[in-house]
Image 1: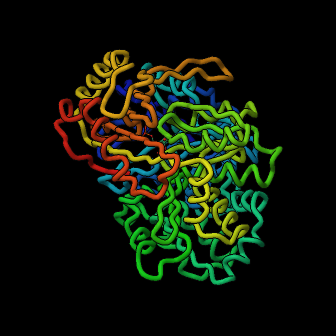
Image 2 (image 1 turned 60 degrees about the vertical axis):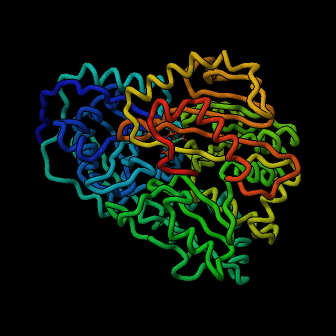
Length: 538
Ligand code: G16
């Protein structure tokens, strides 16, 4: 086997966004050495020789060839061992699970998460470190610096490696073990939840639907729901991972999980509906004709986690745009709340330091100290276990939360495909405007605080600035930031939150309409973007 040294040049902007590097497939395939450069930069940055990594992805277009690149380049870089998911598949939480279980040095996740797939869609690569979580900023910065000084990459000249058969093979100094993608993850879920109790619920006539959106969680969900828990065949919809997700946009929200939403809003809707995204780290929870806001979901999970194991829960964290529902629950329970920037990587230090047990985001992500990635199926199993324990409806569980603590209504407008320079200029101008808003009055609201969110990591002391514009009102918040996961221009996100102590059964769109009107005006959305209507509402 020959090791080839291939000359290359730095490619501009190979900087990770909120989570990993994501690009249009057309850019990846038309830019010479695009993935090779990025993979080599990771190997260089983490000093890969002699180390062990996990590799797998969500099965999207380019998963197969890029997996082979990683394997052949790992061999050339003297990596000691690679643990590969069979057929190159692993959900993101499963990678985190395998990294932690086998104490490896990190892992590669071939995924652009909830972004669409196929030749016209997106491709991405996430890199997790040895705690099983997304690489912290300091590591992604080091990787970026390597991308900008790269002169060559190395690759083993060899035929494609069989990743379909579970076996361990040796190539040079590198061992490649192809393992079942599902076993370790299912074992972990069985250790965390009472499967007997959930099985009893499902045997009692309780009906559920899970939509895997033709992405990575299909095989996991079939095993867990239909085989282990005895749900009837057909419970898992869109169960086969496809390179283009069958044309679906694997983002579990009310807009893109259309089929599931229709079922749950239809006649004879099942008792429970859930969906995950491309790589399985997000979750959406629905009851019949009822949507569980992800921020409320975090507060519900906190409540039941404490009820089950009062001493086992030490604290909770949420990203800045996530509603303050969990803050009120935590206050009542006497637990600390940490407010972090958007991005799961910010929870890692808090989890590692034992400061929090649960964490979550408005962007349909929930997780706990069991892993260092957010975990869609875990959240869904947690919900099922609550329903099995209480035998109440999804709606009743959430309404109990509102009755106890009041309700944070929340809504997000996304303006996609905005010119990047315009969006950057907009944020810069608004940042300067923030201090002047403090003390101003807009109708029934006055501005208590207005700033550009900065985070000081309580564990490392590291300061991260410019994490989103925040206007805090009496009884609500208006927020604006740019997405770090898009691949076309910029996506401007505008979030509004309005608190009601008593009036908890109103339509969110009705309650929030005046908040959104104010937010769009304060953040000058039309002036900068020319848009009056959002691309997506969640
Ligand atoms: C990633 C991050 C999340 C973040 C989300 C949205 O999720 O892991 O922490 O909330 O992106 O980020 P943005 O608002 O910057 O687009 P995923 O599921 O895409 O990996």
